[in-house]
Image 1 (spheres, rainbow, N blue to C red):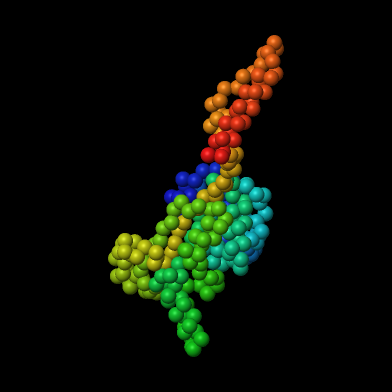
Image 2 (cartoon, rainbow, N blue to C red):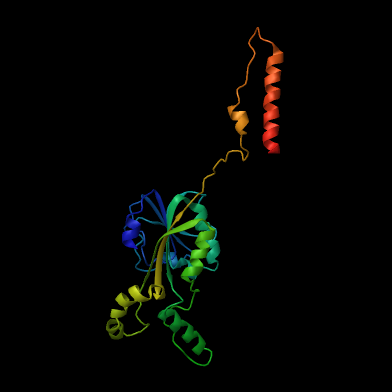
Length: 252
């Protein structure tokens, strides 16, 4: 993510959620904000906010005018908000034309997502430890892609990562490190984490010419124009002849 946001230019950038991570640290835009949903999240102990300005707001009602932000970063923000579709709609509203949105999320169609669902089922019958945080809802990549398409947000970059099984032991995670290279080649959409960049497209209006076509006889037939000393009868006769030719063509 750091290399991606570093190459995005503009004036105004916003990060939604996850204040523990400074997703805009490598970005060079002069105005950067951090938005959280609760005041507790925006003042974690030991957190360094840096040049960002922190504000508390609802992600589905951002306090920014339309077409005012060049970049919005959502590190797992859609999973932790109560209205993910409304938050994404607000992001599309505040973005300028050709502005970018960067989204990170956990993939439910992965080994990590499978373990999380299994833990939820086991908790109904007894104690079970969740591998991932209980709060929030995983949003699938294909589902998110449909949401972006409806909001005129065109995906530029889409990547998956972390194909290792969901082990709690660091030693076992290192043993299955070979699965990251194999998964990226053989089953790329099954990564535990996905990352995408979308751009806001504003379609222009195209003016179309009238649908009718000029008759060939009207385009090529000579028309006599009477001069100041000419007779109006000759002009009327020429026009009548042209109309007769047009009628004959239409009958044919």
